[in-house]
Length: 153
Image (cartoon, rainbow, N blue to C red):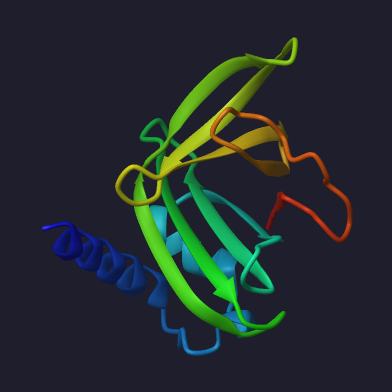
């Protein structure tokens, strides 16, 4: 059943993202145009985070700008800076989490990316989301070479 639901969600995301463009060459597509088909009026964040077994994980997060809290997330495990090895697509409703971490009140977006896989992003500001761990803690290193930030597109 899990596989069927994943396939339905993946197919829906692929159909919604087509918008007249081929997905064979992901780096050459216009993500802003694609997301208008996904959730109507949306805010799109993109960035590549470090990973242990691949060059990085390229995230593309589209958030609905209405009260539905709808989202579309694409996770591409990159073979090189421009070539994806495996791509996973998720859609659903994200949770807004307010939490005090290390004495600071923060806002987080929490996405369910598969069964028992909650992914958290800190809202750094209006144009940046930062990937954080399951305890809502920021990465120990966040430099130009080891960046966990997604920027608005």
